[in-house]
Image 1 (cartoon, rainbow, N blue to C red):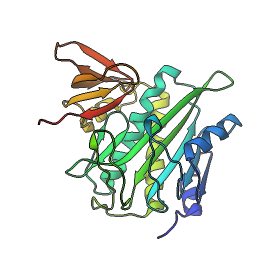
Image 2: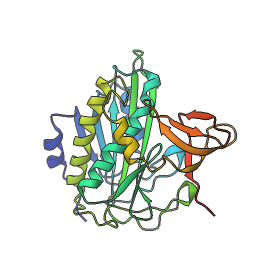
Image 3: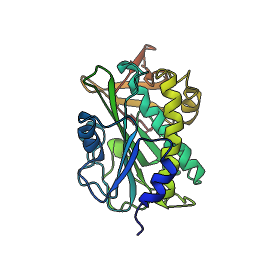
Length: 270
């Protein structure tokens, strides 16, 4: 099982990022970069791990990260051009980057709002995104963007919300499972998209990515149950995603509700 080739990765990404480090094992790349951010690490710092022992997803759920099976990467961003309120759309940008890489590898993949990438005819989860933002000491925003991609078979992984099973690029017939190659593809695609997003002030429409997201978002048109951070679940039809990356849900009474955060379960008949 080959390791990520650090020299090859750093050479390919030199122009786009401030620095790229690969560690053999850590608890969480997001936690490590949050600590680095507090110490003044520069914008566009990248950290990858061969293995995470305490990887996390949304709502502090465990993200299974076995050695050599996936890409576990976090990027520190300091997007001064984007207001704190506009940072929520960054997960959409990252999701589009992952889906584009999957497509190049011949993997049929779609997006599930807000932060999942699903693959294969059964629409199992092959990647997840965790964006953590906070206000920096100078008043600007700091974001640690974590992306986990299942490249090779992950073994026995617990199902996610809504009994969503796990899968991998390998299991879905990817033309390559070279993790160095895929990491370069992913970070190069993210670099280009994040720059467009930043220049547009976080507005997905102005960045030219809103229509693309709507095209590839499997949540739209579905009957959904949204598990909100507080209060009762919201049940309705996923009608749209707006320029800030928020989900618009239409209830049975025809009223529309805008959701900025929550876990979405696609409700299937029966």
